[in-house]
Length: 105
Image (cartoon, rainbow, N blue to C red; front, side, top):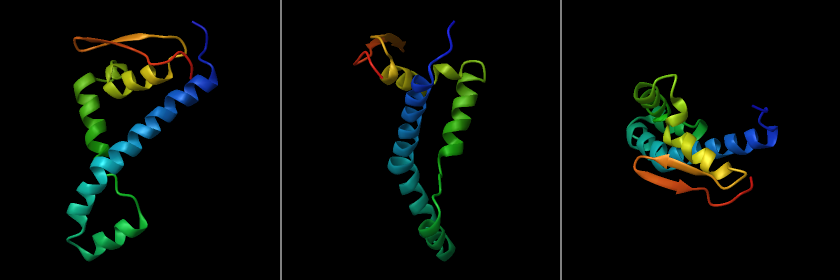
């Protein structure tokens, strides 16, 4: 097929950045605070660096669940394709069929 336009790739990857920010803010930060607030060094570290306490967990679960040859089936990939589809598209996810909300990036 034709190569994917760079703007489409950028839009798709931007969705992944937003997904990571959500996981970091909603799940990883509270978990890190819970674990690191117990130690002086942990409190200092939180002031100066971002600790992604769940990044390795999500990546490992993805690789173990889908394997290296089916990473495109991971829900984050479905979501990124769903929100960046140029033309209305449908995706099968479990037993549901989802239609993309718009036809432009």
